[in-house]
Each structure stands twice: as structure tokens, then as C-alpha cells.
Length: 90
Image 1 (cartoon, rainbow, N blue to C red):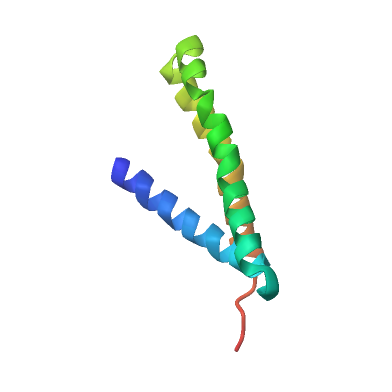
Image 2: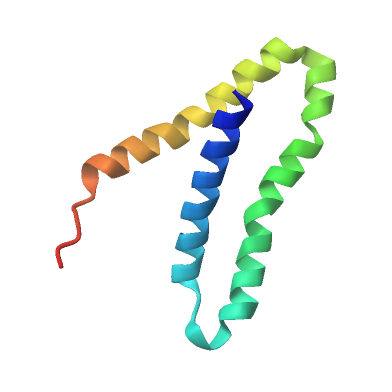
């Protein structure tokens, strides 16, 4: 399970880095990329810092279900985008 989680996280990070690279302007690439990549990890670090309190207060089972439910909107968005987007023609 840890390997699958690391693989999924790596794929997601690579896709997000590619997206951030597309957002940067060529004249300010280093500064913008540093700022965007720092902001990319901020929400996970902020939420992760309180996860121990959640587990201590509610138990791991409730925390696991809550974490799984938080992933459903992202999965639904990906499925919707896969259906709505058209392939790029060369």
C-alpha cells in the first residue's frame, strides 16, 4: 500500500509540476516556479500538522473515512475532465 501511495503521489506531483511550468512566464521562470512550488505544498503541510490531533480525538477509523471522503471530489473532477476534454490535434 505504501508503494501505491508513493506512486500515486509521484504521478500527481509530476502532473502538477507540469501544470505549474505552463503557468510561468519565460522572463520570470525561476521566481514564479519557486513561488508556485512552495505554495503547492503549503495546504498539505498545514492540514497534515493537525492530523495527529484528529486521530487522537476521533480515532483512526473516523480519520480514515474522513480522509477517503475528501478524495471523492478530486476523483469526480478528474472523471468529469476526462469526459469533457477533447484530444489535441497536431
